[in-house]
Amino acid sequence: MFGIYRISLGKEYRNVDFLVMENLFYGRQLKQIFDLKGSTRNRRADESNPVLLDENLLEGAFPSRPGHGMTPVDSATSLQCRLRARSTSAKSPSSSSSRPSSTTASSSRT
Image (cartoon, rainbow, N blue to C red; front, side):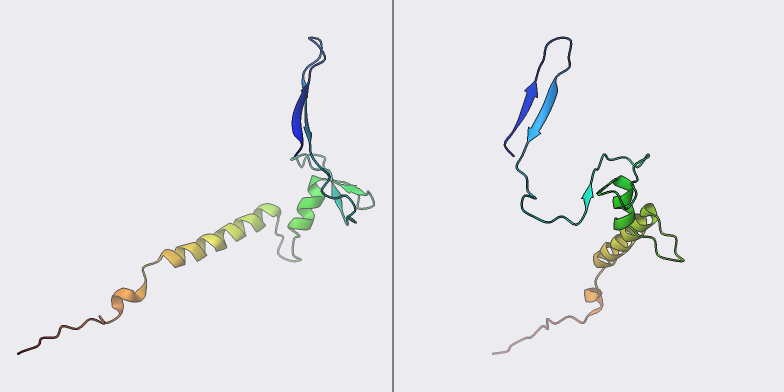
């Protein structure tokens, strides 16, 4: 990142902030380009359009499987449940309490 700048053009205009950073994709061949706004309202482009939008990204990231009808929310919820189940089983009491004790008492007589 090179810097953050604010341009002020007077009282009639509002301030404009700019973030200047290097082009990380210079000299690379891009397969897909997305213009993301963080909204899904009217944010779908035809596949023939070289620049895709938010809904196109969601469709590619969370494709619904035929017959399952998984929406992005369903996919995220399913993944979250699997991760929670995995972490819960890892926290469950270990079976070490049911193992026999390895320490034995010994007495020596002299």
